[in-house]
Image (tube, rainbow, N blue to C red; front, side):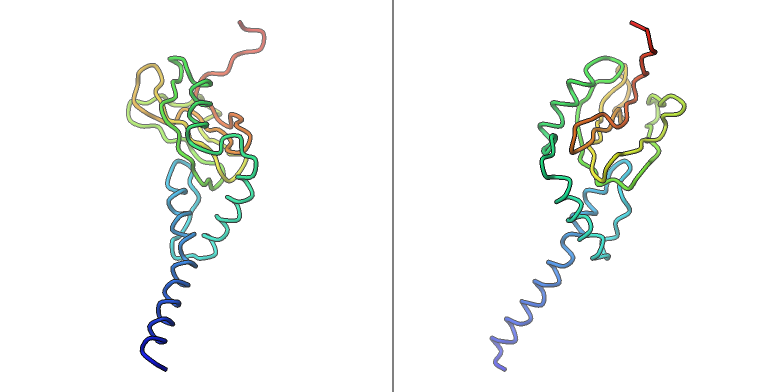
Length: 159
C-alpha cells in the first residue's frame, strides 16, 4: 500500500470518527441551559438521539428560529410583571426546577418547576419589575404555546 493510500485511509477514518461524535458535541451545546438534558459528549448514541429529536420536532415548528421566538416572547411578556429580553433554544431533559438568581423573583408555590411538553423549548430570559435577568418563561418550540410562566395567574372572574 502506498503512502498516499494510507494517508487517505487515515483521513477517512478521522472524518468518520468526527462525523460520529459531532452530533454529541452539538447536543451538549443545546443542552447547556436551564432544564438541559444530560448529554455526555463521549456518548455517540445521545448525539444521534438528539439529531432524531431535532429532526422530528423541527418539522413545521412555529418558533423555528430565535428571531421568531423572541418576537413571540416579547408579545407575551411585555409588562413589568415579566419583560422578555432574550430567548435560548434548549434541548430539555424533562421537568426541572426553575433557576432564580440572587435578588430574583421566586416563582409562586406550585410553579417552581417547569414541565416541558417536548424535548425542545425556548427558555425566555428577562426581568420582573426591573430586577436581575432571570428565566421568566418557557415556550414550546413546535407550537409556540407557553409551557411555563413566572407571572401570577389571573383568578377566574377577575378583571
